[in-house]
Image (tube, rainbow, N blue to C red):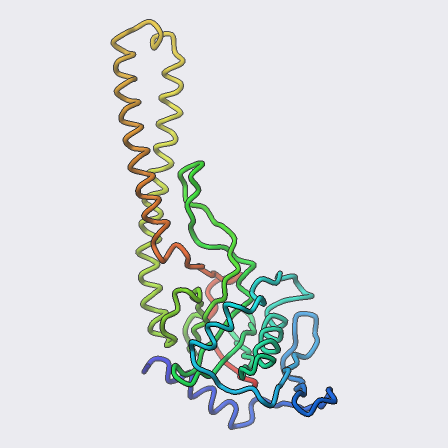
Length: 284
């Protein structure tokens, strides 16, 4: 928790010192609902972001928030620039959460390569939790494709927990892997993923070599010598047996890699390189 403390301080000071300016605008005849226009934060189309506030919304436990996120479909929406981008995802999730009685805010993250919007919840048992639902335009890092034995990207639309610390890279983890919410946990998981990725790269090299060996074997089988020389035929049969064994071993490796929890990790590399967090604004 020592690593995450600077972030919490930034949030408290940022809001308390008035760095976040909100203009309340009553836009609904219902006494239980109103909107707040954030004039200092715009979406990609240049429109101010709007908070949808429900007076009965409260902070809830992590289990309650987790159940809500699993049932909410914001993460399944399509990222379309500039009509529906990260700020729109954040606004949609905030509105949905508040309508379900869960207090939710919007976060503006300013980095060295651009700005980003996401959501924040304060859970009664786990503290601050940041959710980034605009990841669904990306892909899983590695998922097995049995057709060619290599590990290739597949589409993802899972909710992602965000990890934010001033001066450090902006990071995300799939909801299914996010068991803790302090930044050090993200650092530790990143190390695990690096190890996993090294195994995947080794596997891909082996799989590529295997495919080439099969192609070469098939060419040999079509040769005149293979049809006329019994000794050569026997050698090719032994080679074929070895290739079958190698394929079995590769299939076992791919199954193991594919079942590893890290195979569900989205390695999110922002456009332009690693995003280093420089400033965080929180709007409730």
